[in-house]
Amino acid sequence: MTSLRNFLDTLPAHEILDVREPVGLDFCKTALALELEARKQFPVIRFTAPAGYDVPVVTNLFADRDRIARMAGTTREGFNATWTAALDRMMPARIVDDGPVHEVVLTGSEADVTALPISRHFQGDAGRYVSSGILVCKDPDTGVRNLSFQRMQMKGPDRFGASLHSRGHIWEHLQRSAARGKNLEVAVVIGCHPAIYLAAAAKVAMEVDEFAIAGGLLGQPVDLVRCKTIDVEVPAEAEYVIEGEILADEFEDEGPFGEYTGYSTSRSTRNVFVVKAITRRRQPIFLDIVPGYSNEHLLLGRSAKEAHVFARLKEMVPNVLALNYPKSGTHFHAYVSLRKTAEGQARHALMLLLGLDSYIKLAVAVDEDVDVYDEDQVLWALATRFQADTDMFVVPKVFCNRLDPSSVDGMSAKLALDATAPLQSEAERTALPAEAVQWARDFLTHP
Ligand code: MN
Image 1 (tube, rainbow, N blue to C red):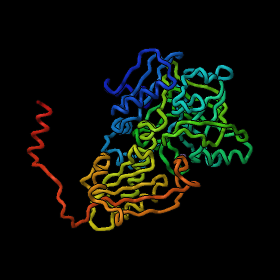
Image 2: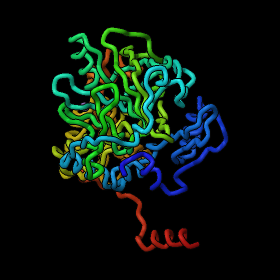
Image 3: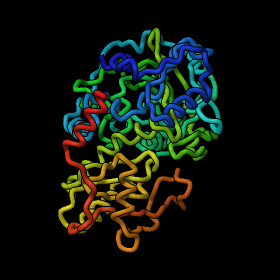
Image 4: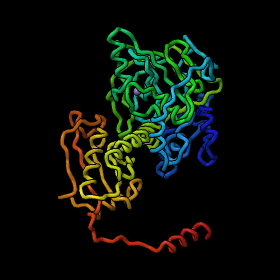
């Protein structure tokens, strides 16, 4: 009951947009998602009969915050607390003998990835990319599993280019494997319960198996089966798994690819993944993630991060109320609200925020009456509660994310803006009697 298709079955009809015409997936899939986004609509998109393939392709699953919360069995308001609770009650995965992901096992020349509905997303992309693969591997020393997302460029029936450019745990594992002259065995999971996707996006310690976080979110262990050709375990109820190895000693150009910054980038670790097997369900669903500067890509990347950074910030500044990484800032801007009880608290929170997440370049603090999820309100607070000569500070030359095209030598300046009002402010916000607001709401509900 912890599969992608089970989750899709829980969605109300208005949350799924079916494309029944046999349209080509290249570019059109991205164009439709971004066009909907421009109209502030975020349905799951399902191509039921994409041209050239006989499997449905689902995308835009992670484009909506309320839907992401439901993946973790909670509401948008409850997400941060649910995330923290899941980390407190992690459940190790359970190995089972068999599962639907092994209904079809293809090896040798039958394991041909060019037959999968892998598509081009942006004009600048070097080719067709798997954007939705969870890469599962094991620490060569401890055996602890690792889940992460890496872009994969299809290069032939049994070959992908990969970039491990976030240099996370999988990159570490590869270095230690390569030092022993060994390739790194990796399984690429395409399509499984979305809670596993959220867990795979988490930045946690190397000793933590992200499947255990997914278990905490789901309230039950994730069932895993052993891969057919490599010593790695994957969700029994996955749709597709590509088994293979990242080569220890071969490197090739990879990219460019449209990244979350909104730019096409060819920064790459230039790794090579060689396919050993494809396993799948008999009638699989192919999951795609809209890459680039899209709601889906950014929300998947930041939902866990927001919850994580918020929890740590709140440990130090208990009167912090909410934290939002607005889409406009890709992963580089953060808005925090707090119930200020002493002058200087907002600056304290801002300093911590810049330290907790090296991606952040701009942090803005606002009072509790400002909704950090509403960018108009945050900018209003800047307009009316902020003076640039006294209410901001800059920290120059700090380690940052290199995908920011304006960064210099892997460093950027950090800007913190305190847009909270002084505690003794005499400025009074315009207000309305509660009865009048209630009347207006009732009128609009039943005109
Ligand atoms: Mn890890």
